[in-house]
Image 1 (cartoon, rainbow, N blue to C red):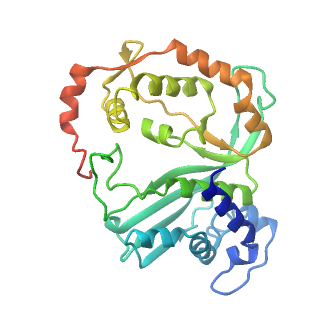
Image 2 (image 1 turned 90 degrees about the vertical axis):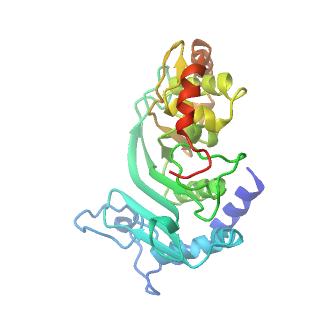
Length: 301
């Protein structure tokens, strides 16, 4: 655990349920219906994921130092929007100065979800269901920053990132722990998403973990991460000499003890290594030299 992670964990233990659930200075009784968000007869709830009030989220972000980090980047006058109208999928958005797409700093859409693990080898998690928090969408960006040769634009980016991804991930892990879920789920839209958050996020299916490992082994020593991700996005990469498309598969940060053991088990590790040995990835240089002319690495989309 990093020094920053330890700092955030210490702060989280000081934050109380009372502080995180206050509604405009009014205390709402805590019960399991609210906590689990199960009362679907109500079309909306004041609580994010059945637990956090908007005021509580704002208080936590200030206490953790999230807002102070943004201020160091010259960003202030924050507008926090929490949408809990949909009991199954909920949204947090943070703006600065004014509420529009060009002043959006971060957006998070999450939901509670049950997953079943079916590994291709004997495991104590085989066939078991786990409740997780699923990240349906996450955007962190700095509209005041510019892309540079050292930090070129990545697929899907409109503005450069905030350089606060690690902090946000730790806060999401803390949230999962507070809500007593088995982990934090994510489906990486692009290769760079999967690579940047490794090894915290692990592909549940070891087949795709093996493929990611092979892509990193074959391409990252030769090319910048941005080039690899763009080349995959523009279908300029081959897998065993055949056209390759990025796969859609779930990753998780495991918090449950048995889930952690699943990823550390020799059966999982050996399966990943075996798959990695079976796949080879190359960039089709002729196709890539044509396609990359379409990319402006230093201008947002």
